[in-house]
Length: 537
Image (cartoon, rainbow, N blue to C red; front, side, top):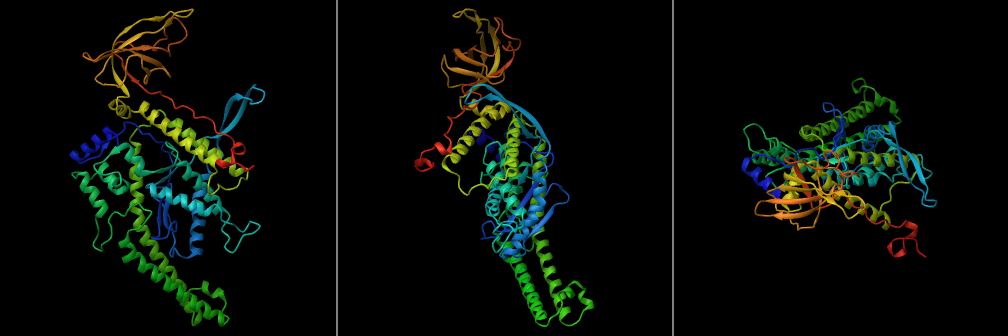
């Protein structure tokens, strides 16, 4: 935790309200995001219990599993989830734009031009917290290898054809969510905690209700009391007023409410099975079950009544689970509204373009008929993913610092940057070459204390792209730093307009480079030695 974040948390405790950590929004928000609030059965890793999902804030879709231990009901849940989610995920693959890329042929060295398709937009899934992303990853791993009736060897329990396809999409989204700065799959608590500092711990920030209690407490109430009520407040029946964001359920809800409801559902199914088996022994036609049991008599009436009781017990469980999920559904949309109050950062669109390339690449792999993602990556693939995530984390930190004065303030407090007002500009030139080059001296008055010595390399954060400089002199008593600009001023003898700051301008210089360095290329899998996962000799 940085010093600035610590100070913001202390201020939140003093004021009773969350303090901003950013002046802009550092994540992309789609115009039409898909919200998914999952719920899982306690003690069953990855066993779905319910989900509330959709793009329409007023009309969410509820999917439930009345008995999570029933394999058929779980597969039916996954099939319905695929029917709801896949049209959204696949709906962005048709509209594309053509991107022209140039490069060199590795063999001939000649310059080549390649035209590639890039999807104009990409889907965005939003879940309440990090637990939702982990659940989707587990769900995708369990689904993408399922055999279907269309396979040559479907096995004893074939899944609907679109279930493994959804598993591949969920696996891709969960892996992309591990890339810093990605916005294809967002945990809302993590995004809110990046933009606001509360007066509680980072662990407590994982509770969406408590986090929103600090950010937007009710009128006249302090954040700590609103968060405490969100975490521990219970109704007359002893149930949480604000259920957790999941995906796990509350133990008291399982013991007092959900468990007895599932027991009643199991008893109704057992009674229906007994009635059905008895009717089958007597040769009663199954078509009689479709009639109203009030118009039937004898065995047919018993079967119809038993089926009606099963449906009623399932509807009871649906109502219980919906009551638990609806508050979280409303909290997710409230959090989205809060994020929309912040303007997007200047580099957000650039990172979203990376997400669009990722989405387009996965779309193309599916269209080409490539196999599902492996259970474990080989050594080269794992190393490439790790290098990409490290590079993207560095890139994200740099871009956030350039987009947001509060993010840059953390570097200034750490002595890695300084900002101030230009006092004077003195023209100077480098005459060591054939033609003189401008090297103006800029004197800056600042209250910052950067860890820098004369001759150190600097980079101008709010000037032309990649403008380098060096520290020419320090006057600590007067708080003055003299900087010599080295680049970004054009090729002429006189600097380009606005490439050199003028007296009165506000400038910011960093001690670190403003672009992430590329890591060394890794060998292809077939060229990797067997000691690192390559093919054996």
